[in-house]
Length: 216
Image (cartoon, rainbow, N blue to C red):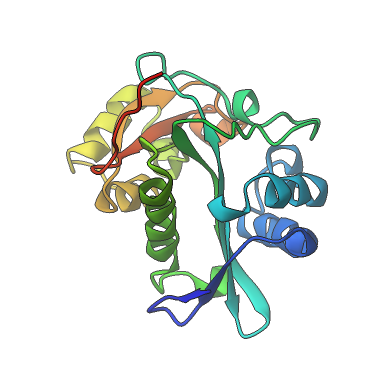
């Protein structure tokens, strides 16, 4: 267990919490298609496959946050992908590659009434510690860009990501990720179904400064 400055206690995810975690993600992302979110079965599989890569945050006995992910092999030179390329929708596997060199962040969910307490930053720090402990190259993920909805008629998704990256535009999600040490090299087309932003997301990357490449 680790207790954050927010007062939330963090534990490695467990299969018996799968139903609560699925409900938390639905609560956190009410406008998303359920098919694009984890369900109880897939979370149970993930807790068995890679428990050290996922964290459940509790306030007393109430689940209020989670940050989960998997190990994968990822080619930064060919970054375009969809979330369904990483996590099969049929729950046949979790997509976890036990010897993968990257941590892929699949979901961060925080109860709405617990937001703005620093919990998101604590979950990112826990993910970074996984990368340090397992000597992973870093974290990659597809990050939502809700602010693009207000700019899509004026610029491409790549231009929007670039403008947020240099600070000329603010995006409540992407700007937070950049503040936490990530870079956003490009937009991801058709990443997830979200008509408000024409299905775009941003590729976000955090490089582990202590990573030691291995031969073979």
